[in-house]
Amino acid sequence: MVAIDISRSDSGVVPSHAEYLQAVRRRSRRQSMQVVLCQIGILAVVLGAWEFLTRIPWFAENTIYDPFFISQPSKIIARIGEWMVPGPYSIWPNLWSTLSATFLGLFVGAGSGFVVGLALAQNKFLARVLNPFIVTLNSMPRIAFVPLITMIFGLGIASKVVTAWFVVFFLLFFNTYKGSLSVQRELLDFCRTLGGSSHQILWRVRVPYAAAWTFAALPNAVSFALVGVVLSEFVGSATGMGYIMISALAALNATDMFAAITVLSVVGLALVYSVRLVEKAVLHWSAEFRDED
Image (cartoon, rainbow, N blue to C red):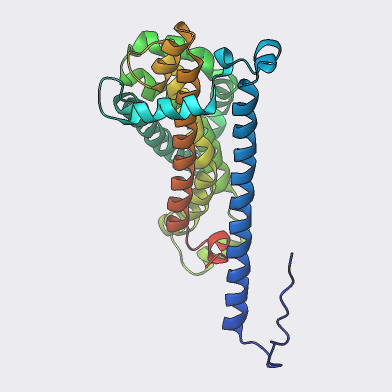
């Protein structure tokens, strides 16, 4: 790490605060570029080794580098390119089916988790009454419920949305609940001393605290919602990325399977970064993002 000498510039003049901030930003951009280049380098080495080893007959016959089982990066990229073209093999209808169910499940799960978490944080009696039921439901393996959900809600989008909701609800509920309870007693007493009503304290103190904790859980919730939808499509669906993967498994087509995994990985990464941008826009007052400006 290069230390920045803020005591004196090259000309012997003490730099201003603006010059110091400019130097910090330049160093941050330089480090970000280095990180991206390192990530691209690691990815290139992994894909290059994968492609190279699967083309050597000895490796293909005696190791896991058999193209029949793990395909090749060049074939996977070519298959994704074919899927991107509109037509009978286009991936867009299946991708839209998975994404729409993910968004709906995440929206319903985040909204209900936030509201219920905030409500129970406000009502300690109700929280104590419902505590054993919530803990019991949360401790159950939710994946085991997917076949039952599919049986009840059918093979359409409803079962996918319910599965996504069931997977993300408790994550967001517990974060919201803990966030609402994390408000310091001194801050609440100070607000009451200034004449703040319960309604004002709720909306101006507890909700922002709870929102910060909720947004902290959203990147994981996005990933869980996507996993829940794909899992539901594994169990029973006529569309979606999970349907493509199950079809590829039935045909022992490793190229289609890796292509679907690659598309889902890129989509998941884009969703996580999108949530991060929304979090920064909504929680711009937070110290975490204020320090970045």
